[in-house]
Structure formats: structure tokens, C-alpha cells
Length: 110
Length: 114
Image (cartoon, rainbow over all chains, first blue to last red):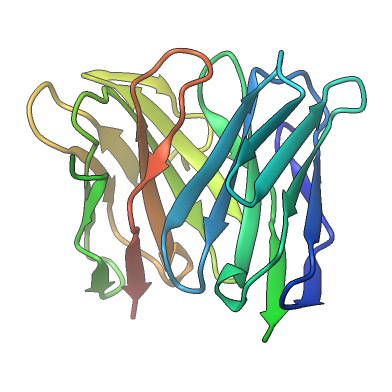
């Protein structure tokens, strides 16, 4: 399968804690993107990391990519209740289409 | 710069009717992708189009489903003779193209077949 797989499926943390979710994939990728989806809403693009990059930051988000292990992680620091959402990784290939995993459901408890 | 626009946001069709979902990409984007999300599931790739061309339709059911992205106007995902199993959220994304470009999503069209 070309799609990524997120881990864990569900995560519940207290506000202020850090949240880490992982994405593993099986075939070589061109890039990997992380998205957030609030319940019943559309997807919001968070960050894209290319296969030749190892780490990227955006605000409270930190994404790492380890192509040797075929995995990526998304770290959200100092979580807020508003971060409660599902988070998806999307693996991109040379054909430019990309494939989603089933997502990690994050709940941040105020 | 408006984002990806999808309409309608909600669509109700009776079994056997046709559903037409529209997607206007972001300005300057010529690559469009359609995804389907079943309840409580992730997004499944359906089709990837560039202007006037279908690049990859490997995720699209062979029957009843078709997609187009004409030279002028929005991309259209068409579902003929809808069945209850077609009920899902359909998302469109667009990008400027080329390897490693971000894709931005619309808010989706929620299709309900009754």
C-alpha cells in the first residue's frame, strides 16, 4: 500500500502537554504532508517536508522525517484545547498525487 | 486569494439520481485532486487531473464515477445513479503542480444518498 499509517490511532493529553504522533509508510516518497481536520470540517494543511529534509518547524509544530526508517513524526508543543482534531499524514510520490493514512485523533483536555 | 472552493457543501440525492460536485482550485493552481472520506475513515485518493487531462484515476470506481477539469471552469466530479454507499464527504485539493508542492483542500461536499 502506498498510504501512510498514523500511530497512535487516538491520543488524549492535558492542555499544555506535548503531543507526538507518528506516520509510517512503505515505499519511497517524494514528500510528506501533515493535515489537520476538525470534526466534520475540511482539511487544513499544516506542513510539507520534502524527502531531502529531516526537520521542519512551523510555530508550535515540529515535523521530522527519517527516510531510512520510512517514518515521520508530528510534534505539537504546549497543546491547547483548540488543537483537538484528527491529524493525517499524506505521502506524496513523483506522480504528485498523495495518499492518506487513517489519522490520529487528538483530544486535548482543558 | 480565495482558497479552494467546493460546492455545494451539502447535497442530498435519492438513489438512482445523479450527483455533481464542483471544485474551483486556488488561483494559479492547475492540478486538482479528488478524495472521498467515508464516516470515521481516512481519505481515499480518487483521481488526479490537470487542465483538460486525467493524470491518474486509479482510485476511482470504474462505473458511475467520472471527473473532468475543463480548460475553463471548475473541476466536476460526477456520480451517476447514486447508491447509499456513495454517501461520504468528497474533498477536492489543488496545487500549483510539480513535485513537492503543497496541496490545499476545500471544505468538502457532504453527499447523502437517501
